[in-house]
Length: 418
Ligand code: GUN
Ligand code: FE
Image (cartoon, rainbow, N blue to C red; front, side, top):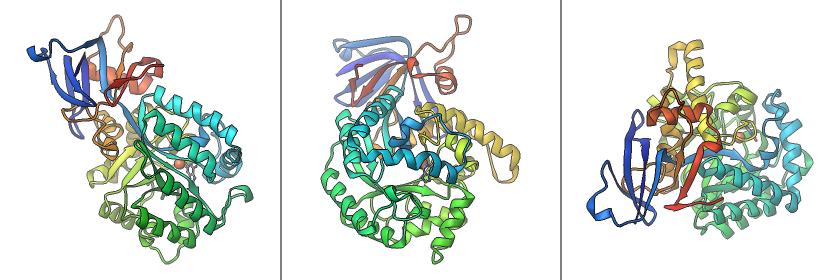
């Protein structure tokens, strides 16, 4: 048992933050036991860590991030999706054929993710088995709860990134076999997106999904170009999402669909039927996709939505920045298309980045009793002339905070050093 004293903020539900100023939280093994304004007598002998005015919040979840693109963050952001993939992204991903290069890049990626408070993540690798194996091993060893996928693509990619479909399936099965029993970071099927996958490849992945009860991530209706390509290349399907449904890929582990910016009614129906998560990646949307998710409307219609950094279409690895950007973009969307859009509130954005996404990773993303204690202490955001309330500290952190404002990080109830 350990006790932490701080201001405590987490999502009560979609619309409300739970705020416990100047309170004590008891953590037993890796779980929250309770929160009190005055420490109960029975806990007075337990070790106490006092963060004073620091604000304790749940650690963040990044539901869409490309580890190999970490070295491209903040570069070539004036291109749009198809050109950005060809000119910027694919040449970088091809370098991961070299395992030594991959190690150097992936070590930095994983460290920066944790430094920025992300402890749960759905991560894309590249097509390369050796490099992607290193990534999943590294994340698992560091205790990050989540998924890593070896990307599959067998068309419309440069020669050095285009796989033979049989070979792609074989390598993916080896990856699933090897890592399905991991403690923290597990494998996930990762057909990149419809334009770079044939029906043969997607059906092969469907068989693996059933055999290993595997999760699946991909990019869904992310741009008008991509949605049109999906319809042209898979004319038997009414929408992008149906391509994966037909292969049986939605019936196994969790399904996480990046972007979901131009969904048809069929896309929405299928996502809801299988309880899938759509991922809003605001910076990526601004920089290379140029479309805005109907976040408020989709939330009101009961779709599960989380947030993603989408490095390097998005440029910032801290998901807290994406919570702020999601609020900003929802206002633009409502302004330009008022009929079918509603702006979201800050509590909704924070909930997407914590409690709503944390359900994917075994009961974390909250600080309520019973939650797995993955948490951050943030500080240094008030002004001398204006002391902020705990919920204002959290909001300001998402708008102008940096990793320097994260004073402590807890994973499974244990403090991380370094
Ligand atoms: N669509 C297919 N591949 C990618 C990628 O790497 N990033 C983004 N944002 N969209 C994609
Ligand atoms: Fe992406």
